[in-house]
Amino acid sequence: MAINSNSYGSVDDVAALVRRYTDAGSFTGETRPAEADVEGFINRTSATLNVLLAEAGFAIPVGQADAKAALDDFVVNQAVQLAHAANGAGPYAPGNEKLRGSPAGIILSEAETFVMRHAAGLEALGATRTYAATYGLQCREEDDGGDEIVPPFQREMIGHEIMDWDT
Amino acid sequence: MGDSAIQGYIQDLIQGDSNFDDDGVTLGNFRVLDRGSPPYAVVLPGRIVAGTRSGDWSQVQLIWEHPVEVFARFLDDYSDFTSARQAVVDVIGKNPTLGGNSEISNAHVSGATEAKYLYPAEGADVPTFVLSRVTVRVVEEVQYAGSGEFS
Image 1 (cartoon, chains in turn yellow, brown):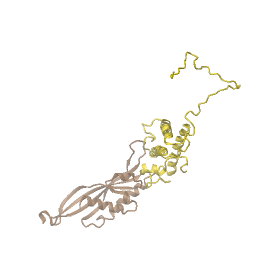
Image 2: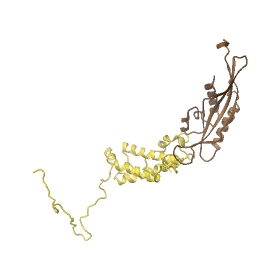
Image 3: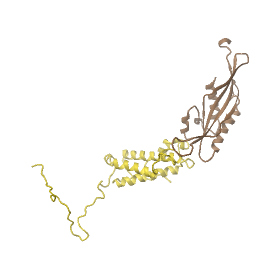
Image 4: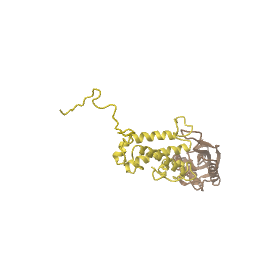
């Protein structure tokens, strides 16, 4: 396994934060977790982020430097927690009494919070947003027979008055 | 001479053993556990278990006991741990003056605990490290000739 081109963060970034699980600072085939395991943590967490980013209208992978750095950090920190879990430690460790739900569910929830709350910030930084936040909302103007659909309610129908505030 | 010097002698000997990296043998620095290159040996300050006048009365014989905590990562078995601890036992046993020091008249391992485990603060029943506290007994001959009442 290797890091996917759409992924964020790196194996070395994870190793720097959990050196005790490495072989002199690097994950190998003999460490716990092994290098391939860490690559899997990174790829899967990145994929979760990318699903949410795509849902919010962003082109993936996000390439804008600051936005990417933030996404790198999110993925690396999640991978660190998964590396702890592989050693029976940290918040995702099996048997941790404080663990509520599955690690995947927690990661999804935290990623959702991150992306959805800060989509405007990612866009403001210059992350490419290929379609608007209103993507998915559509207005149907004709019925299946091709006849014009008249809205059941229209302006001025139920006591509504249009006021021209400039006059 | 004294405690610090003896710690240094023990550190030097263990660093010279191929089972250990030089940086993996420290004087009291447990942060070595985060280096990612086990096994580790942490030499701690000793205690004096006995002392007596000897020789021409300007000499004092002190018997020290220095703890050396030997750590190995706990993965699938105890082979790394037992090799590391045995290396410490052997390197001390082969060097009764801790490497040719005239003020040391004897040194040997006098005890070691059974395997103990270091667990993460949170998590399941999986230890991160297995360790043993090895006791190194050192007989130091301290010469006070030329000082104090012997000057």
